Every structure is written in structure tokens, then in C-alpha cells.
Image 1 (cartoon, helix red, strand yellow):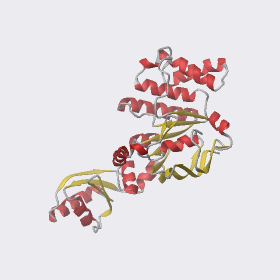
Image 2: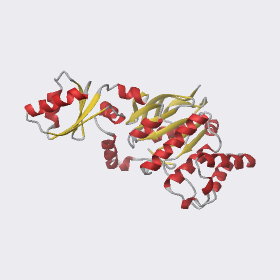
Image 3: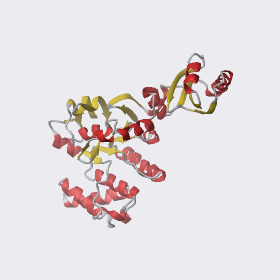
Length: 330
């Protein structure tokens, strides 16, 4: 059984399609990533799958239950960690977990037992009776994950779980997420705009842009689409260099982005000197050239012609178009 299936899932706000027809099959036990910039439709997709938002059209099933006609069963099978903080700072960690258990009508004895289990899982036993307002950002995120696991959900949604955390704390949280996915077999759907996070954690990734899935596969296979090596060139005349390189046998593809040029080649070690020599002969200045293996960022550039960071910046200009629903941001 697939944990989640969607067919033509759409969500519109007026004339604006935040999600524009998504088809997904997510396997039981899979750690699946929705990767894309803010505003791409990741959170709106999770909002629909967790019954917070009603789809405009299309269909979906979550753990075999129809999203529209069996909402209660869907909600019993899922846990969720929201993008925005949702803990009660005036309660202790234990009290937050106890409240969650009561909301799910768990038996008192089971609540007590489960609190001990999830606190141990996220290594917060020593802080269980401290007020949450004394927790660090990383501790709060771990407690939110523990809360999402309290009622033993089949599927756990993590919406930008490491946003705002420092790199070391983020990396530690990745280990927690991967460990309980592999150990307990919980299906996890993760949204993120961090390329390295998706690459490290996810079994498969759907790259989303403007409400549509533009690529879906394992991280390695997505990168294999580009093949070979990538040379990222910074030049005073990237347009002229692009035109010059497009006719060269050693060049597979060129993409302009953010005043830089990505050049796909089979053998970077041999291609880089040729590129520099060609630029010099044609009096084009190359300020820098970086040779690397393809990354998920390069995959995004390949399909969209821009970086996720560029898309993030443009989203700030369109902030007034953002829609907030129940603590979720599109």
C-alpha cells in the first residue's frame, strides 16, 4: 500500500493556483522530500494532505483513507510539525506532550508511557519538567517532533523542520529524523528549501516550482540527469561566453543564472582549460571558474533557469500575495 496517493491535486486562492495539479505516490516507510523555494506550494500541499485545507479539485488518499470523505481517519494516522512554532511556552515539555495525548483521547497510562518514550527518542528527558520558554531553538524543534510522534502516527509531516536553526543543530536534527524513520518505519514527508537537507535525508525528492512538480526521483538519479561535471563561471560578459560555448563539442549544456553561467561537460578536468583558452582568444574575461559535481541546486537551475535563492528573493517582492491559513504559509 502507498502511504499517500494524489491525482491532479489543486488548490486555488481566487485566481491564483498555489498547487497546480500534483500527482504523487509515496511509499509506506519512505522518507520523501518536497523541495522548492518559499511560495512553491510545498506547505499548501501538506496543508491539504493533513486536512487543514480543502483541495479545490483533484483527489488524494492518506494511509488508504479518502482525504475528503474520511477526514477523521486521516487525522488519526498522521502527525505534523508545523513550519511556525506551535508549543505553549508557559508549559513544561512534559505538559505539552500530555496535552497532545489528551487531545488524541489517549489513555492516561499510555500517555505517561509514551511521553517517556518520545522524550528519550529526542534526548530531552533531563528537560522534561523545564518550561519550554527556557528551551533553545533546537530543543523546541525536537520537542515538536516528539509531540508529533506521541500518538504513534503512520505518517509524519515535517514542514521546514530546521528553518532558523544553526548548521550544527540542523545537522543533529537530521540524524534524529533519519534514525526514527529507519528504526520505526514511519513514513515521513519533509518540506524544505535546503538542498543539502533534501540530499542527506530523502529517499526520493519531488522538486516543486510554481505549484507543479518539475522533477521527481532519488537525489542521485536527479543529479545523473545532468551527468558529468559542472563548471560555474563568473564573467563580465556571461551572455557572450554562453553563445561562444554553445557551439563547442565538449559542452553539453549552458544555463545563465544570477549573472553566472553553468556549463555542463563530460570531463571537467579537460574541459576547464579549453573553456579558459577559448574565452581568452575571444577577449572575454573570466573572473572565476569553479569545477564541481552536479548538485540538486544545479538540477533546479537545469529545469528552471534560476537558483532557489533567486526565487526566494522574488518571493519577498510578492509577499502581499502570500496566504496564511491556520498557522500555515503557502
